Image (cartoon, rainbow, N blue to C red; front, side, top):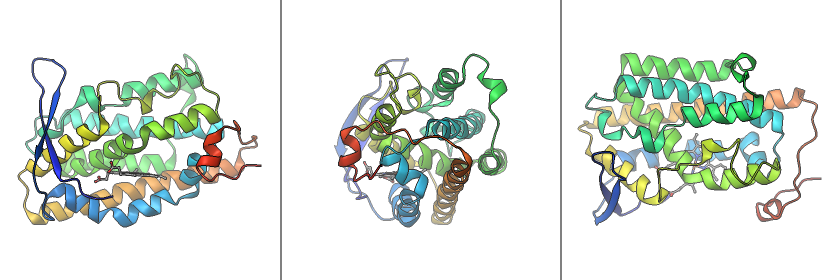
Length: 263
Ligand code: HEM
């Protein structure tokens, strides 16, 4: 993914809608946004190539497995947003605090209610791989809050990059209603331009007062965050092998478009 040469500034005040303005600026390799993008390039490619993710993109989605994926995301975002709330005034995180725009915990709770019904909470539990991810997020939030930046970056920037495509694929493959029930996680209602928001987020990351050693630790933590995600995907893949369920094939053009091969 190439570096964007634009940064964005926003005025977010008095509960009004944020206004994003683009300004020309040249990024340097020492900018945190650039270090994170470069430092996670390899692990990003690995994540893209996990079987679970590849199947998802092809529209090969088993509903039971998709639901378990939403459960994993629910525990992950609950932990992350709890730690973000704890650290929202911390100088190393405060500029990245965008609860209205980004937070996914409530959207995921609504998705789970849609899939599992009103008593969803008694039906879901945190898987082993998700628990390891969640434990790390809590540890970071409580012992080394600057590293929360890496966890927020890995999830929110990723969600803003691929969310709409994934939503459409899931909607078609599982024949979910066009009104968006079950897929609220993918819908960022308070963000009008994902591209502009990502530029704002990058410029906020670059304004954090961090020395090079800390920036390098942030890159290492982001790589770890990707690995935690991959472990969750791999666990889902294993669980998938034990679920006796027809692959849902909506037979929609997206399969062809994504190079899918579903029989
Ligand atoms: C960015 C594709 C999976 C995290 C991007 C971008 C693309 C992309 C095209 C660049 C968007 C832009 O610059 O505007 C994909 C595809 C995936 C996938 C096709 C799966 C097949 C993941 C996963 C994660 C992730 C599993 C992490 C959990 C990120 C992050 C960025 C990103 C953090 C922002 C990079 C940056 O600009 O610094 N992705 N992605 N992606 N993705 Fe993914």
